[in-house]
Length: 236
Image (cartoon, rainbow, N blue to C red):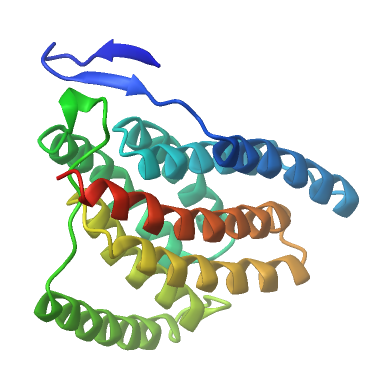
């Protein structure tokens, strides 16, 4: 395990030890992405870099490491640009105007919730039932409202785009404040994005195949995240 000190010198930033599952996600994503792109004749270096950063982000996130926000920042910048080029405006807004600044908020929040000075992850927690009910109500209303707005634009997939954007906003918020329910929301987000990018792939969007592969690996990691964060909550 490699230790670094953050700028305050008070909290350690550690690179956690990767398990076989972590290496499976990293190597698996990189290998499958290259193969799929080559077979489709549309390999995109930009989307490959974005996908790799994002996979590292979610792996560090599962481990409770603040390093997830570094890779989250890089991945969000690149994916926001790609979404903008693809005409997926809600997704572009999500990445560039929400996810990017939230990486800085998350870094600050997680520093306050470190376990063992940063060596044992973070203090995770479950939401109360009233909080969960409020989250479902707000998310449903937001999906309906945003999809109505996107229907007035040239967004090719307004409903999927609205669903992916809205639920991801809630998931990122829960991630920032260390709520375990975020992983269930990421499953919904990943499912919506799988559909959206699969359709984009059929329309010949250059980097869509890699995005499909990326969200398949995200889906698997979200399930893994539920298990890992549940274990960390027992240490809190």
